[in-house]
Image (cartoon, rainbow, N blue to C red; front, side):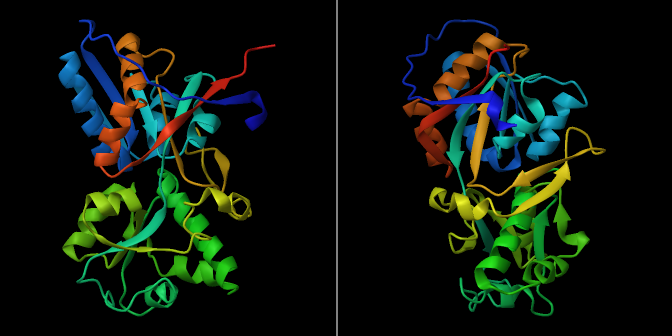
Length: 303
């Protein structure tokens, strides 16, 4: 699907006119963006005297609010820019910005089983030990869920252990799966889970201990893009009845203003602000690795 896109790298430094306009802003966003996007929305709203409505869910579930429920927000921010490409463009969104990065980690607490032993060399053995409870997000609703599956495949290749991905997946029973990775945090904090597949930004914001995996596995290193592209998974698409293929690649978040956003002028000012140096500072203070130079992607014009 990528040939219909053209990409331009731009630096946005926008002085925002703070004029009184429609003062409601509705944002749909990925669960992992709940805290940093709220910080950005609150900061922006304070200047605009605007009211904010925010809905957090897995990115695929969020996209289906548009494709299935026909609910159109003012701003939509997702943990995987490919959800825009595969599900929302060009019908709902004609352009979006790649605006942040992340990496997969194993988050835990000092009370987690074998917390004092786990390392980047032995983590697969730890997760396979009897009694260890590991949580993951649902790949049908959340990119963290399908990225967990991709990371398991990458681990099997990196460690040259055939069947490792299946063993690790089998050690995570369905009862340990949740709709999005953000909801897993409370479970590991309470001790119900020993380890959860999460993002570095979430682990940092929640002040969890976490294990950084080798870059060959964590989907966080742009230099490893070719290696990541060797693995893929199929997940539910625009509806739960169809499917799309997700190929491994470095984790990049996307944000957009839908073409039919109810409060489009205000939403576009927010988008310009969140991509500006001031917005980047707010996001980084909330532990999200926001890009200094966002990448703007637009639909190619019709022939």
